[in-house]
Length: 579
Image (cartoon, rainbow, N blue to C red):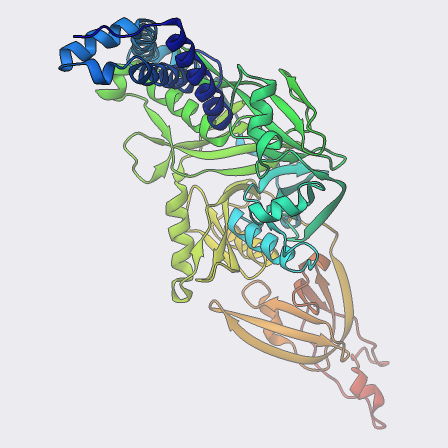
């Protein structure tokens, strides 16, 4: 057997090929230089494999080996160092995985999150219907795409990115998302100017604002080469592990990427947590790492990290064996989650159920996405999907589908609020479901109507705490002569639609709430109390109640209507119902 060539020239060629391949791999895959990252070990395995393959070629091993045993012997002679690296990587990875195992470190996993107990009615303020976020992510995406379609100067070159991050902006719950290039060719055409705008979708009013930027965004996930956000981060922070960046804007409207720094707190690979974040200016690319993140930032901890950490907390408080056998006090999060805006922060909300998944919740948690402060509220009731099914059952003849609910405080009652959509994904109605008694379901074509109907059901079931409705303004009154009365039966309730003095304004009164409305006649003088914020279809207001107005009397104390006053004869006595 001929001797294999192990010349310095061959070794130099092997090293050059390995370095070049490594640089290309690093530029494309962007692995962090960090022992806590599995991608770091993959990078070294790749380098070792490239060196060995190159050595086989340059040393002529593939020609000289007579069999597998000879090949292995020659390979060890020329590739001892990379083979040792491969072995070391394998050993470290296996041992690191064992030391990170939840079987051995269940107590450490259960302590990743601290959970406090709270009072729902004290911690969660009642919310007016003009502050309830009505848009879920899918609806926001439809509005964003529709708005971009209206912009002739942008629609041909750009698309709306899929971010749609929910934040608090000037005290309002909104979703924000940047634009992205339509394709690689449109990137070439527009890269010098960057992305020209981002969208703000108000989740309450459903208004979409296009914020045009004097200078375009040049550092985004839609960029290529050195301006690509992931590559920009890796070159500036080569040792950091990052969660998926989220798009936000500060209070002045400057676009930023919030790039949470991931750390592993258990062993080498376990206990995923967040330690600060890098904020990258999307326009200039300037970045700064904060361990104490500014308060305008809303999303540092992702919902996935929060859900995982609570599951560890609820599952392993009493040890790993208890989580498998007996399962005493073992709780987990429900399948879905949503976001709640409160106190100028955004909270992740999810239900908590026993490990048996019995379609009911024992409570729920709210976790601050910026600080990870987590509060548990012990309120037994329906889990979210049961509430969704309950709402869909009320409108089953319409085949509407419920969105994943928000959790709100309505009249001091924990309440699921959700939109009801048709097959095309358009919102047609809204529903409120009582968490503790999910057979109490109210619907309405507007949020105001839905809340009004829900509060009526609460009073009927003696659940309403505080009779003052949550309204954005004081009630107003209107008086006049009844010139038109029409009726309609809606959801089994007779509704009276009343006009005064031929006015275009119509007042809507429910017979179930104001029974004396059935006594109204044309020509009656009345005073109606109504909510100015309950306007529907521009001219219809929901009335809170009414009274007969004081009418003029004759000398004998008999009341006179306008009609009798106009008659030339003697005044006629007219019986008027008592108010």
